[in-house]
Length: 243
Image (cartoon, rainbow, N blue to C red; front, side):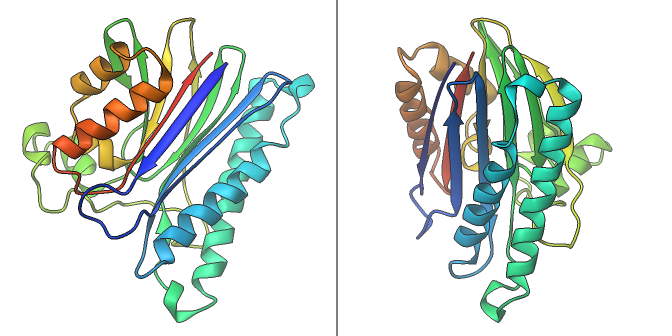
């Protein structure tokens, strides 16, 4: 299994509030997480960093000898809860941290199985032989309006409130995440990304950039450049994983 990630603050933002972590173990387990922080001053940076670190601490406790799907699902649910508690308690510790929070999309990879958790509007995709499929549902105002038919997908791209998320890690004492199990076949690529990529670059462009790249590092560079070409208005983070 191989994984590579890269983050970039974009062309507009003064700082980068995105964080990602990758840990590929010799025992056959892979652990990935991407967080996109929110909050004033450095609060967003800290929220994403602390959530990512706490999430990784928890999921890295997985044992390949007990890596059935039910056990991995329990571990990842506990990891989301731990990350949420970490950020929530920090947000209440000082006025500068009030209102801090972060998205989180993370997973445990074992053989061809991926157990995935998602909170917010960072995304997971699977890319395969000219096709791209979004694996997660955005927890955002715009996504909810599209799902209920109040807004078209085309209008959603330019809607003024498109960056407003309806769920975030650390905002409340408890958080509801979505969980998925993905079967990743040979030749398929798992992509985790913040909305600094998928909010500016089309799915077709994302798939083409990955397909045309000779390495994961080149693909990450291409994706970030595409986001720059589209204005680079947000932090951009991409993580790629192949079995």
